[in-house]
Image (cartoon, rainbow, N blue to C red):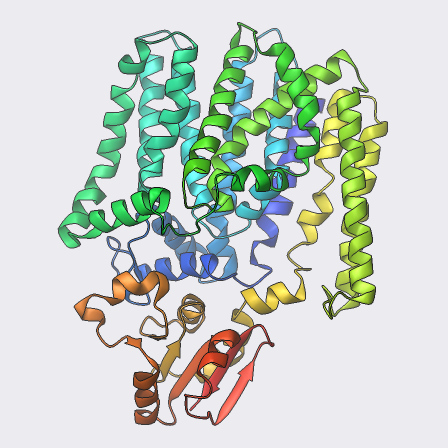
Length: 559
């Protein structure tokens, strides 16, 4: 078998083993995974495919397509962890395929290694820590990533086609379809990110007239794709667009009270950790990109597109007041493209390029320090804290770090440029393979209430009154298959839906919770975070039975 085909098969196996097979291993993590499991479950149960609901009340923080995709997966594979996470994993895999195709199509025909470049680009993308984390979690960011990648990639293909040709129009139509689907997944970012990338790229190429000539068809197509649901939700819920636009866009991006508010420097400080292990190879790649920056062929144009694609969305999300680490996920495809071209160029000039060698050594030293710190904390503790109470988990964690260090050293010693990059990219393989099994004890205790809920789920009948706090309610609904749970304390992201008249009485303060408990003795359950219970325990009635998942976890009280 040809080496390039072998690499392609190995990359596919890499994806299947690390991204698909382990999806059902660990419990769902709160709040995101239980949210994107429960809303599709309620869509299926209620038959309402237009207006999203969570715990039976309106939930208008996102459009509908992401919920449809997750609901489709649940219908195919059942109500389980695998089905809930599969759309994210597939979206990441398809994004990797898109950038592979992009590289293969633009490389000059005389370059016989073009498929290898595409495989290396996909490998770099799939082995970035954030990409792996998102691809193994039930969130909408990976779906948005795929549709945005498709939008930008197909528009770029259109820009490479003869102006006015049928080929150009086909790619512009595909770009518009992808943009419309991105809008139905997460809203107006679907337009902001492609415009931020493609308009400056065309200006950089001095294609000023194409800014207008090439834009009308994808914009019109995107509008037509989104229009049916846009009209349906407006007819069903006239307030949707007001809430969604002002709360999820203007307030989140510009408001002083923006959710997840962080400083401008947040992504600059945190991004290096998200791009690991390739953070250490950035100086080597930059040296290679610098040498090829002025290339006038297809490679040079793709590099210029990738620079716009990486830098401008990154700055846009940095300017936003509200920030989450997953917001910069659209920056990872261009990062992988630039890394692949840059590293291959410097290693072609010098097989043991000093920047690459320093990167391999720096990565080995970094994870070596983590190894030493981990062993110390695990053996001697830190303020009474130890990551694992089970020895086998600690042993696996040590092996993970040793594996990374060994592969970094192997990459350092290797001579072939492609082999050096592949070995370095494989350094987190054992981490990705085993991380689902060795989550730290405290993470499991704080983020996985499903362990407690599954323990008592069958004993909670449909006529039982369930009360929960905002932190726990999504998991309660999912694991107990209920959409009529009472909320005590702060409504959080359910505040909007709870304000409607048809949700009256679902929000409880302490006094109304006491009244509800006293009126339903023998068939009332309270499930909440330990930290919430500590605030209420002196005011609430004493339960007849109680259990918990740990001092930082969750409590179940029966009355």
